[in-house]
Image 1 (cartoon, rainbow, N blue to C red):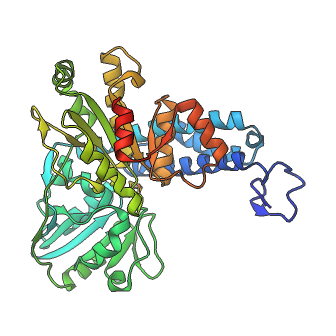
Image 2 (cartoon, rainbow, N blue to C red; image 1 turned 180 degrees about the horizontal axis):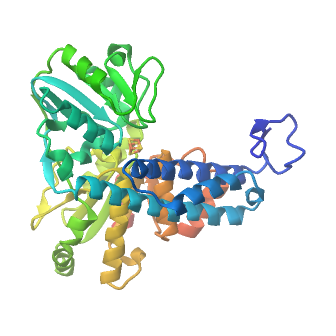
Length: 426
Ligand code: SF4
């Protein structure tokens, strides 16, 4: 039997920590806590690299990790309080990262991004780290190499200090799960800056480089943001052929959405906008993820869809049109830009003098990754109810914990797109 205190399997169960290994709910809560902390640490790390830190976040991470060794483990109620605190601190971490990104790269501005490849040498950059992308853009200036974003770096195109580089030409590919196929089909060099990079196929292993916290056995790792070897590699590879896909609109931030608050409120008042949906999160591979594409296709034309993180690649190639000049699909950016979604909900609730649960906004999220856990805990900390989650409940959530979340927050698992939409709009 596995003892979560001793972190090892003990035949017959642990005699010191008798409860360990026997209470699957406590074990599940501990897993949620640790996954949430990993999410906070990712945002905290990116912010620190950009020169922003918050001692309260650091001390909470230390304390929360320590609790996994102490008696809070035996008290499920206290543990639930603790995981909500993870959600609270995660909002601080996302806010800090937003400050760091906007201070360093400016506030995002809406723009259309070219997808595909241009003729010439190329490097595609995946992961989440805007600073690595910026450093690479600086080091490739004037070298006749086109730079492409992949996955969660798509929102980079909206930031003034990144889009000013004319050789940041577009986006290649979509969510992380398809990268083996996408990198195989990209003839240039590849840079992985953070998590969600897969063990590569042999066909592109020698063209792949990692940096910062990322590392893969047998793949060249770049230290201290010196990208000279990557640049050399890109120039030694055949030139890419021109290929174009559909343009994608990016560059929305709570600041530019809230500038439209009066117009949005008028459209709501006049019945032109009926409902807002936040559909996004970490894309989960597999057929079941098609739910999200089918769901957004069914959303009526008088509704706005907010999205973020790589779950959006399930549907961001679709044409949603606009409502009196306001795009029906608003891409808020990376998963950490859930902070923008939270700010929009807060501002609407404040203006309309109501509770966020009374707003005409529903959350339909895809999740499975550590950052998604941290964001979900933030939403629960804000007491946002009736969130639809999918494609499936993560295995680390025990049935006991799921039923507590269901009772306390009315969390639901997705069913069928038609049925869920009907329930939401009822
Ligand atoms: S949104 Fe989630 S799944 Fe997608 S790349 Fe980022 S961390 Fe990974």
